[in-house]
Image (cartoon, rainbow, N blue to C red):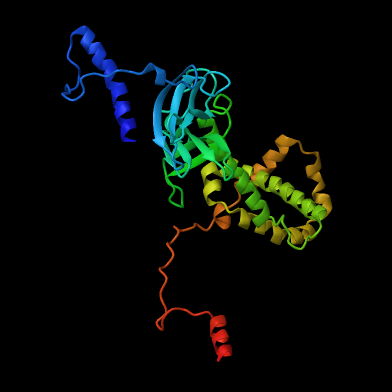
Amino acid sequence: MLRALLLAAALLTVPAFDAAARSGLHAPYPSSSLIAGITWHANTYASGGPGGDIWASTSGADGSVYAAWGDGTIGCRRKVSYGVAALPAVPRADPHTVGCGPPGVGHGKIISLLDVHGTLLGQRKPKGRCETGWVYEQRLRLRGERGQVMEVRRITVALDQPTRDGDTEIHILTNLPTKKAPAVRVAEVYRERWTIEGLFFEASAVLSCEIDTLCYPRAALFAFCLGLLACNAVALLKAALRAEHGEDVVSERLSAYYLVLEIRQTYAGMMVAIPPGYWSVFEGFDDTQMAQVLGGIARRVSIDRYRKTPRGPKKPPPPRKRYKSGEHVATSQVIAGRKKR
């Protein structure tokens, strides 16, 4: 490693020394009384392919040296903006490419590289802003248990406000190409994913679309479809409430559980108190008329009646206390000891 560092230093300083000598200027570093000059052995020069200047390198957990290169075709089918090559820890080792970046030029460079337990990390670059924070992107090289290698993009969202669990960043892994899925777009789509998960949670926990006693797959699927249909009805009610009371009030204060509970408790009695003929009037309503009716009803709804129960911050688990009489002993060990007597 020391020889590699000395060689790297020589590679950086010799061009400046030669340029300064030709121009008659002094070198921008102290002169050396030990090194009088350097002679290159051209017969030892090795190239992995056209182009491919080295940008950053790191030592891997497997003993190899991994180097990021740019604007070359080292081991790739065509010229790419950047790639990663490995140099085995043996004399006269030839570099072999382990990852190729996007084809062409002008798609960025890997300016730093670090190996963490077999995963290569590059420096993240700012890509803009989304609604909840700043978005960054960096390239990762993942290695599976069988040695397979995959190069992915890690999108990081530095949140303006921490989550309720205290997280300040969200990391997203994707192998989608940059042109089709920019980093900011990936972050925005991931945020929308939580609305889908919230819908399925509401369908299963509030509307009971997953019934444990349904052992037949078709019956379970039918119940799940009914739950999704009920979700559409509840979503229509929420939309009417948002139109009358505001987006923030409904999203932060309205509880879907208490809303559905109100419908469950009053539906059977309402069907008895109001004959079916009174409901037929709504069959001829168009979308505009139905929206006006729902808006009039939502205007008279008290949100505080269906208010959420705010969740407090998570408390850290209490420290485990040892038993006063010593360590805990399993009952099976006590019984086994008595049998041996």
